Image 1 (cartoon, one colour):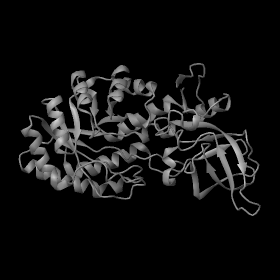
Image 2: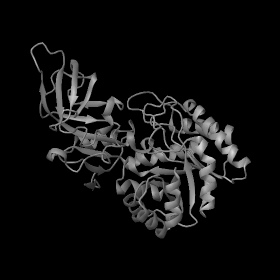
Image 3: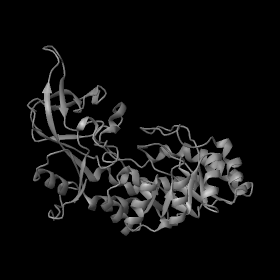
Image 4: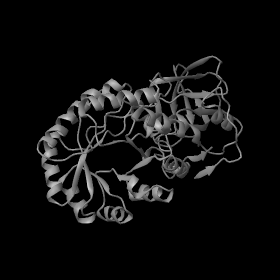
Amino acid sequence: MYLNATDFVGRAAFDRTARMDGFVASTAFDRPTLVIDSDLVAENFRALRAGLGNAAIHYAVKANPAPQIVALLAGLGCRFDAASRAEIELCLAQGAAPAHVSFGNTIKRERDIAFAHEAGLTLFAADAEEELEKIARNAPGADIYLRLIVEPTGADWPLTRKFGCARDRALPLLRYAAELGLTPRGLSFHVGSQTREAAMWAPTLDQIAAVWHAARAEGIALDLLNIGGGFPAAYGGALAHPTSYAADVLSLVTERFGAVPHLMAEPGRAMVADAGQIAAEVLLVSRKSDDDLHRWVYLDIGRFSGLAETEGEMIRYQIATARDGEETGPCILAGPSCDSVDVLYERRPVALPLSLRAGDRVVIRDCGAYTSSYASVGFNGFPPLDVVVI
């Protein structure tokens, strides 16, 4: 459920998160609730745009599809990367121009391709012959970009298996797209989620540049490069400022590709992660035995209700409580459902106050990305996240 907190106004200048902190502290929630500060979303967009120069920023809608966020970004001139008909419909309903929405999923239903084409979308992703054939049948003459597989380069969460084609298949697929009457415009890739340093992009860009220059040398007039996502969020760690990071990535791109006529980027996490925090509640604190070294702290939110990215303990959310400053001890953090995999952090226990009790409020920070969009519709009867945009 999406709500507007229009009655909460004003902004403290001393802290980027002060408005969220104040709203959460002064509000009673009867279920886990994600609070998003729209000003921070706008600030993050402007910071990335300042570093990426003339690149077209396509917000990855899957990161957080709150209609208020989409409408805000559309008004700021942002474009959108949509993965489904529902995301396309959302973008168009919130004011995005069809030409500013790309259908970036390489796995699409034929009828959804037809819908997108009829709605005015012109740019589609593909990575296989059959996908090109589907696009040609349902969006004749469409522009396409080909997604390539890249080798892992140190990202926290490599994305190298499910999407993309091998680089040695790129030129045959580009030629085939042209034979089908499509317009092969360019290449895309994903460097990996949470690529913490801009320098990590260099090996991936080298791989893509080799294909790009080979295609152009063969007479395939590529003019579009989609550098995808990978722009990181801090999650309590130290990162370069988004503008500096983006500028360094742009410099690496320019070194290898020159002036690309149409450069795209698809940030999602970096746009919304630090603009959100979840208000949650402790349900139980227990020990499994008298000599257990760790407490178990169970929250009213878990992996099925928004915290899916704790899978493998890849994303380490920062947690604040009203008891911070008191003595702490290690604990295993888990969700409320009757599923044994609903454990958030066990390999690396979390230090939380020893005085923590059932009923205490906890605030999970930097979780504006991939939380509400991952929440189930109600596994085990536990509600999905409410979302409040302030």
